[in-house]
Amino acid sequence: MSFRTKKSLGQHFLTDKNIIFKIIDAIVAEKEDRIIEIGPGTGALTKWLTEKFTNVHAIELDQRAVKVLKQEIENLVIHEKDVLKVNWQDMVDPVSNDVVIGNLPYYITSSILFDLLENRKLFSEAILMMQKEVAERLVAEPSSKEYGILSVQTQLFCTPEILFEVSRNSFSPPPKVTSAVIKLKFDKPDLSFSDQTLKTVVRTAFNQRRKKLSNSLKPVLGDYQPDGFNFDDRAEHWLPETYAKLSEHLEQSDRLS
Ligand code: SAM
Image (cartoon, rainbow, N blue to C red; front, side, top):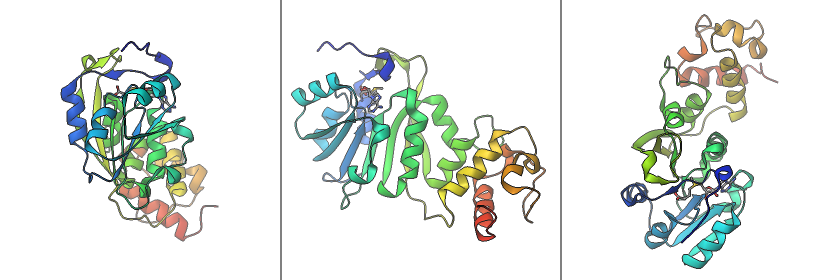
């Protein structure tokens, strides 16, 4: 099959069967559970997904790829859409264990991640190929240079695990960077504060990551410094749980408008 890949859509198709099977094997789901693939392209993963699962949906923006999928793959529900405009509530099967999977278009990896994290209650897990550098940020520990907003939010909202790295040569055309497959398990209990409060606190803290938190958090806290927190620290030294504790505290004390 000849298909002219588009750089602007992040099209790097998987050609390495070993990697394809490792991704499929990493899915923990029953045969009838809904599997939602982001960016199926011409079906490198999709073909095998539909052999193993009976309730596969795919979201693809490129109508040329949609045409190929329609011709070549049976038992697939295709949504010709921008994944960033999907209403996830409408996409999931409310009676199944929904799993998201995808070799992501790298130009929108972070936006897709934030979107999935926001909708985490709808899914049991996500298995995602992304730039290794982004995967490392998701699992990064405090005080490392990779630790930031994405690390704190990911680690509070789910359990992330890097499964394996993938070389550039496993794709056609090869991307510029090494990739990694990560599993996000949406197994965390509900939080006692809103996502919005946490986002405000974490973004404000990391906005000036070199400053002491007493300074960087001023736009949120003013001069208020509740007990039990070290505001002489910098953003990168606080654990995700400390950000959670501060968010909870702020909501309970009605400090955030
Ligand atoms: N799954 C295929 C594979 O592994 O060979 C293709 C993966 S390729 C890295 C990313 C896919 O995402 C491409 O098919 C691309 O057309 C699609 N894509 C890019 N932007 C998208 C968007 N905003 N919404 C949905 N799909 C998108």
